[in-house]
Length: 200
Image 1 (cartoon, one colour):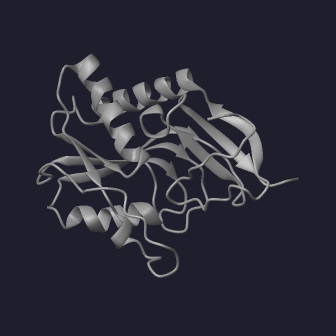
Image 2 (image 1 turned 120 degrees about the vertical axis):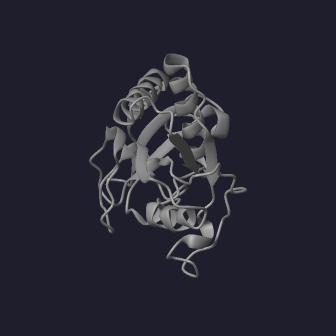
């Protein structure tokens, strides 16, 4: 992604304001920062879940899936266990169907979650509505022992009572700003997290 030009993507809960004069406010994470955040969250997941042997990581399309795979790779690197990874499309479980176009992310492919600790993984936590949709979709697939939430960025402005268990970065924002996440396996280019905003 080129600094100074609007990104061509947006997070699941953030409207795409490309072309509306938004400009880069700050780069929150560079590639090294993002790698360290993923590694730290992976360690926290293992510590909280006594080694992680009963953990299943379920990423939300699109960037949550990539982050879940990175977390699994990190856990395998230092813990030596193969953590199952799933992908969940929540487009048809959202509460704003009819208010905006539905954009399915991809096929839902989730390992057996019965009696497992499921960690839902997403890139940005904003209103909490995507997480609510994820819970509805997940519970149709089985009854986990517990459900936890890991996000790369928590930007605040919750509209539902949702809180992440694992956070890469708490980032105070204005509702009018965009948090843009780039992951090389999804977007190409370097990993980064950037805060964009309208003209002052």
